[in-house]
Length: 203
Image (cartoon, rainbow, N blue to C red; front, side):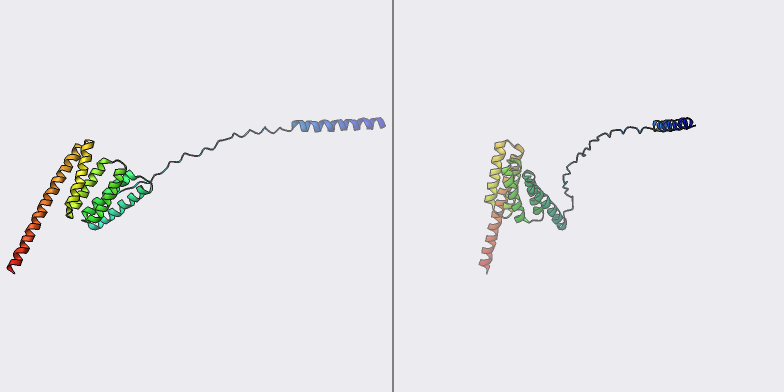
């Protein structure tokens, strides 16, 4: 009886152990983790946005001219701030042209001088000639024919030395016009003096 009990106990223990091993053996193995791929993050290439400067075409009333002057002045300040002197010289020339349209010769003369100073340093002979012709026009308009002729003679020398035939012809036309205006001015002054003398004699 004792031997039978031990035999049954041994059978139960062996069955329990085999059952446990069978359970562990059937446990599913977790799949291996897939290594994550390293994705390199690339910054998008940024484009440099440069400011675009627009000049609006407006009518030629005094109010519109003042608006256009303010706009061109802003553009000129931008170019001077960023040391774009070659472009700024043209801006000053444009401003002077606008002041001429308003018959504001003092302001026009000042901007022509600024444009001329820059164009000389930039060796922009074409613009220098144009500025000298315009300065001669202003000086002639205020009666300073001697200085006007000096500007034109300088412009003629530059055009001749550089072989600018069209500019040379333009300077010659301006010289003839100034000489004509000077002659007319002298005759007008003489007539005015004669009128004064005649009036004095009558009185």
